[in-house]
Image 1 (cartoon, helix red, strand yellow):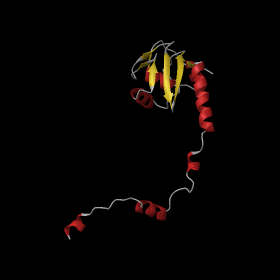
Image 2 (cartoon, rainbow, N blue to C red):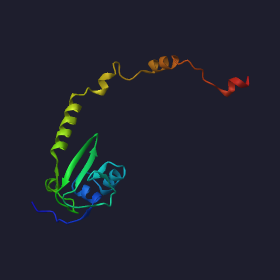
Image 3 (cartoon, rainbow, N blue to C red):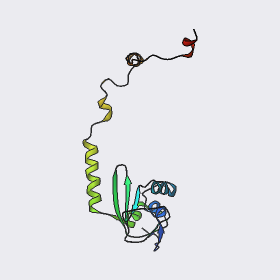
Image 4 (cartoon, rainbow, N blue to C red):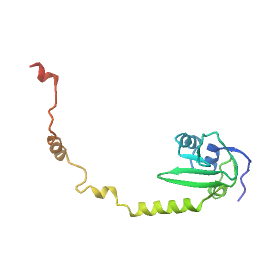
Length: 142
């Protein structure tokens, strides 16, 4: 495989896109703006310049991934080369494994519904249980 052209400084959103954390730069910038990406423990903006050795924390689903920037490339290459741009910390790997195990052991949400979706008749019965009267302007006029 060929190598990606490297640089010494690069925008955060561009690096996140090149390292294949997000499909587009726009998605990467949105996630940064929403506070789901931190650099060296600080909230960041999409235009923040990264350099090799920075710690980048990325929230994906409910888990924070912590990666160390190894190299900077402005070009989005194949996944094996993109993975060379960063190294995930051991704590981050352990947290992701723990979250995956918790998801695997969690029950299926659909199994909590005993009878499935209520029928039209069930819905009417549920609405009949409410103790309030519907107000109508036409009833008051009579």
